[in-house]
Image 1: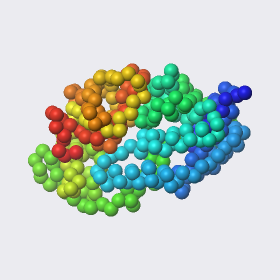
Image 2: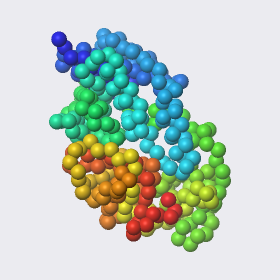
Image 3: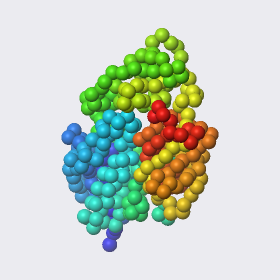
Image 4: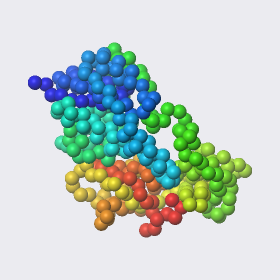
Length: 348
């Protein structure tokens, strides 16, 4: 008797090829598509499952997605925090609900089209390092990890498209999705439409002088250089901080200015996928940033002090810090507080 697996089918090429691989391996595949937003188009997912001749279910989770992801995203921006909704979605919605469907349909496993690897119950980076998505999976539960399959392990994107073409999939050349899934127009327009902006001062943090006016703090993130609209200078200026109560945006000159650099941070909601307690490893503070050496101190309240004496630029509250030991993803947490010289940075 073949083993059963539920596969999250978005309609994109990655999840479709994941289903193809599992079907070819002899699994009984059930496609699951979650409708998270009113404007989500299920047609590509329906076509893919029909082409593959697999059972397919579309499940409406719009209410839960709005409450857990969209509303939280907007509220975080109102608080001056820059969140990572994709990590939160994998943690609170996507994999949790897929796990529920695995139980409901009495399946042995669940699977996704993520670029990642699981071995001996541990999470490892994908062979396609450029597409590796372990950063977005660092907050999933150990139970979910134990029950998930990553069929794209060892396959790069070009091979995925080749497999899709060989199987006459309509989505073989479909463009990759790189934006936040629930924002279907310009990101800035989404923010403006959902948060009322209040104009305020832009202050040069080095001399406390006003050099411009912003259109609402939520329009800016730490390390941002473009879109500041500050005239009268050719200097490269960067956002280094926000004061939510005074409605001030702080900037500094130069991409290596001291105000962008911190030497430690505190994480909340720390999640470990690796059982052995560690005190040093590498960490990634944003998806496309390089990994940095860090040391770890476990705090009594469950938070984690992450230290990096070499200094790192643009570590930002609300973003995710993922931990690694070579290719092994150890877990991660949410950046709660950014520090320097054993003190919280006052402008963050």
